[in-house]
Image (cartoon, rainbow over all chains, first blue to last red; front, side):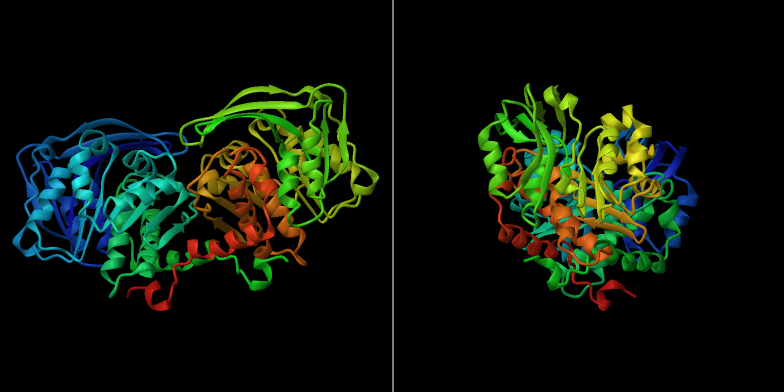
Length: 306
Length: 306
């Protein structure tokens, strides 16, 4: 189950400008996770939410019982990316029906083993936790806006998470620590057993009580639109975990690879276009290619030179 | 053999301010490489170059026959690093005797198997290549200043290199391509068989005709001064290669790990302090720790979930 935003995005990148793209954290997460498991979405849309978008999600067997439809317009976000796609500028944020969003968990979702709390008001994230029985794994995301404005509410949610996913700037800000390694370790002390730091084109880093893990980026020559990469990562990551029996260090590390791979597809086209058409085989072939990216065939004779 | 700058640096970081630190590309490179091989330095210093600095290099059995001493002052550079140490501002550059530097290769160095052309005027880099018999491996470094001002001279040198090392911003600028993967591939087409892109706290990426390799950063909680990290990387990288018999993909990948590890020590203290006291055992223990950073114990049962 995912609780998060459902949006219509307007995106400008050096490769073009697109309006009314299906987006939002719950959408990107659920499309990714649906390649691994059945997923239910809790979110809200307005009267203008297109029937085609509903069909696209249903085609992936994503359960929409938790998707409320309210009078008014769907949440709209507009952003522009610069030359190297690493920096983005928000052009507008029209919360619309999302402003009154009160997550209501359908009865059928109260026993959910894997829960992802997308980037929404931390008070709403806490409210969701009150409505479900303790899931096996609760993961969450956040953003600078909540770190700035609702730090204590956010810290209360974070203390209840098993896994926190955030980007490198957010990790530094949350821990108030410029060194990313120290910042990630500090966040583990806030409660989560596992902190995943997404670093965009530089890959991802995970810290657990067992230590650090680094996943390189998947080397892409075509990056069209980074919107939704973080939520696609989370969907691949949680989707993979949902297929595991016991979850330990090795499963978490493999989940980071799966998150990276799904995110690598997401950015290859605008909005949800690439992930909506993705297959299990597509993912498997990039996961297979992954091992060559860091393997240096260390033999004992080369590891030490004297 | 290394040709490059020998400098006295003034560095300000959030951790303090130090003047007259021994620095320069030839210094950082040679101290690192001396842990693997005998190294000769070609550079220039002024009358003010401290005897202690000469002793420090000699203690590492670094050959200084190619180190000219000229009337005037040694090259001085001053820089300041910001909050997260990722960005630096140059406060001053006093070329002094370095302005008239004409690399003169001592007769004893003309047959040198491994040559590193530190970041100097590309015309001087070419001049060095005229003075040596074809070495086994020629590697070089450059910077934005030469990409901006001497592009055609620089391209002429690059076409003669086996290996080019540069940072990510320089790679984008040199290839005039925002996508780092495309940029690195484009640079391989300029001539070098191997391009190593140093990404600071994000690790390093190498591209050869065989594909991409990513080395994670060594996770450091203490970063005091990034000055010299790139040249220390090059020293560890070339030093490692100098110990190899045949040099292929696996040796190059291991060399990237060694470069990363030596650079990780460099940044733990101001100037050359940490690397000057480094031992082979220090390096070996971080190289050993490296394999745990990317190993996710991929077993066939976990790689694919259906």
